[in-house]
Length: 196
Image 1 (cartoon, rainbow, N blue to C red):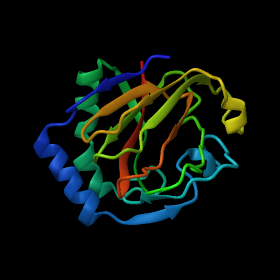
Image 2 (image 1 turned 45 degrees about the vertical axis):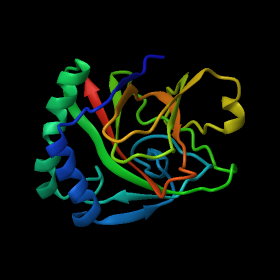
Image 3 (image 1 turned 30 degrees about the horizontal axis):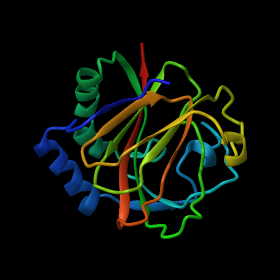
């Protein structure tokens, strides 16, 4: 399992522009899951659901292309920072999840894309205690349901959630986002890149 973390991935002025849009200009919609699981055309189907607000302006399914100009430079920044050769952007969305004060948080294990050439990049937009847990389990079939029971005992790594930190890993690895317990919310930009 190869996970790469880079702090201060975006120039501050660019991050401020994105945060301004995220917090004032973008339209949010409520979904019952954070993965492709609820989208028949791509990805996993989870029975374990996590409520999330997803930005519908830049979401791959209902894009408002007038907003893309703000996010297009990300490709070049990520190529340079991570040494990637990007062929295309498979998905770009922003998730906002809210506090879960108990330890009964559901673990919505999922993979972002079954293609082994795809990389997931998470860019944390705020400081939060809701990290991301990435396992070494590769998901080849997008219809597989991944339960927490099946994931017990597997090797996994937890990444700390810090504003302007980027985390890169193979998109076919099972992972989940933790809900914050002490912070108001968790805001993360989730990008799936097809790479050479």
